[in-house]
Image (cartoon, rainbow, N blue to C red; front, side, top):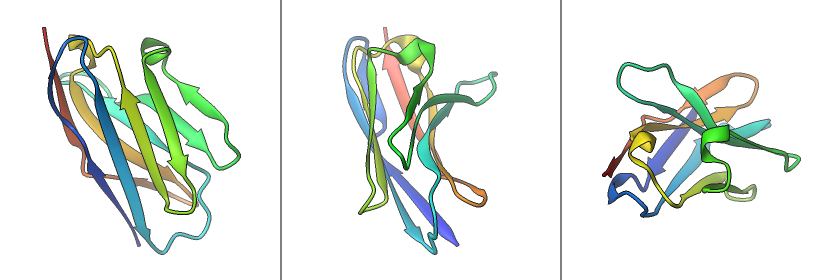
Length: 114
């Protein structure tokens, strides 16, 4: 079993920054990718950013140039540095780990005030 523990959410004014972290523990055999998704009220969960074991990275168009994902393979952690935050970034952010199956964290709230 794999556990994902997220930290770093909170309330910030527009233009501010937050850093999310996610630590994976448990029976981790082979990780294909780790990343972040978000879900705003009334909307579907969407990809924010993800990083593969080989180093490839995907970003949602809406966060390119503002968010940076990084990963520490030795520690099985992934971070999301979020700069120039906008009110539309407000959502619950979920850590995701893709291995032979998909694992999700419990979610952390990010609220950006105008």
